[in-house]
Image 1 (cartoon, rainbow, N blue to C red):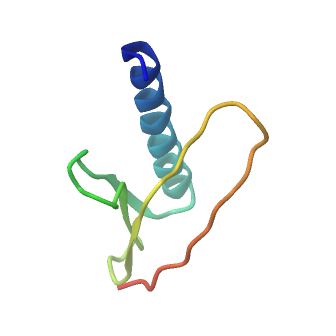
Image 2: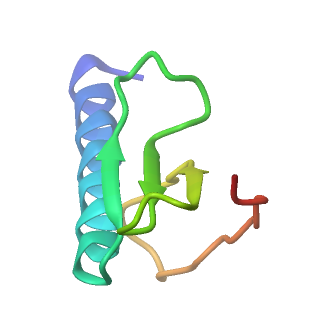
Image 3: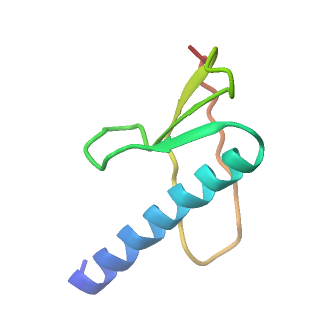
Length: 76
C-alpha cells in the first residue's frame, strides 16, 4: 500500500468515526471519539443522563455500494 493510499484510507476511517458520532449526537446521545490507540473502540456513547453507555467500533469504506454491519454489544 502506498503512502498516499494509506493516508486516504486513514482519512476515510476518521471521517466515518466523526459521521457516526455526529449522528449519535443528533439523536440525543453523548458521543466521544477515542484516541487512535484504543484498540477496538472508536466511540464511547452514553445516554444523556449517563445511566447507560456502549463502546462502538466503526468500519468505514469508500466506493462501492453502501452497506451496514451491525454487531450488537451489551450496554453497560
